[in-house]
Image (cartoon, rainbow, N blue to C red):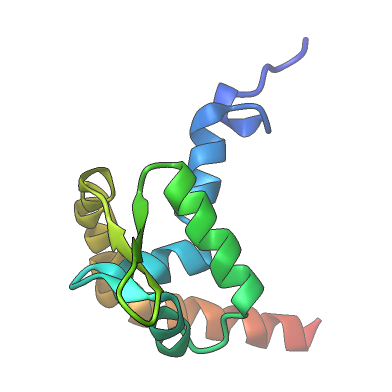
Length: 124
């Protein structure tokens, strides 16, 4: 008897693909940086310690392609590009806030679990 995988366990699941693109490490941090106001590329890069120019470019393009972030060219001298969250992107505030609040509530338990895991691993 074979067990079928749930649709979102496959690589072809459109929901999984979207989650992979909007809930990865850099995308969440980019959206957090943009939540207050539009920002230029280098301002975002400075705020996100450790992100490379390539990773920021790729993440912004994925978010833009999915309608979460928009890019605006400012034609004043000097020419600049500014990124902002779209109305669709703003709908992510509630679920991302819930996830962040979960980390605040349960970080002590997670840290205990990590310590236990590390101690058990040392004993093996």
